[in-house]
Image 1: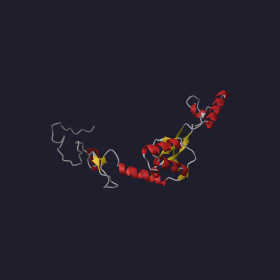
Image 2 (image 1 turned 180 degrees about the vertical axis):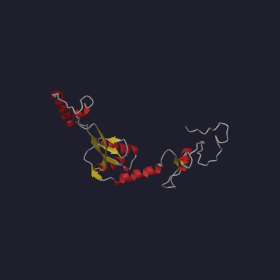
Image 3 (image 1 turned 45 degrees about the vertical axis):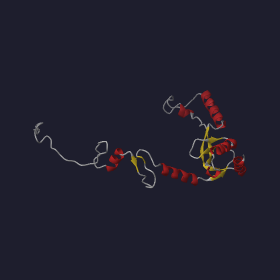
Image 4 (image 1 turned 90 degrees about the vertical axis):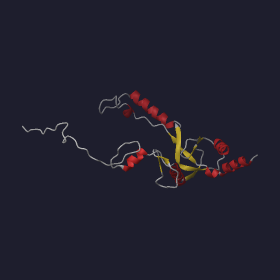
Length: 194
């Protein structure tokens, strides 16, 4: 049997005083050699890394100017398509228009220049068909299948109704709407009217 080396609590071998260096955040937390994390944790604001001419922003936030520049670049890169009566939405927003009367009222009431309007054509969000085998997977035995013809017929009827149903909702599509010139002229006339 080997003997264990015994070190007493109050002996100089039990502990030694050492000096260590590292980064400490403004709230007193030690981060060792991770300067970036210490600065992140200890700061409230920071300068934009992409463009130092932009305003400072909260450390746990993001540069609003860069975000808007990126957003505008995405809009400018979108392909354009003539509008055919689909619902419209303002780019990257939640303001929807289901007819040109509401769009015209919005443009006039908000004082928006037609050139600044960022209307996108919407795409429909359709209901998804139901896969009964997947829906009942927890109720079926391993490698089992539905053997009830009534349930299968009801599922097929439901899927047929889903295929025929109108959209559940609308989302921004991939095209910028090219609005009819007659509409743009109408907006100009409404603005010029006394």
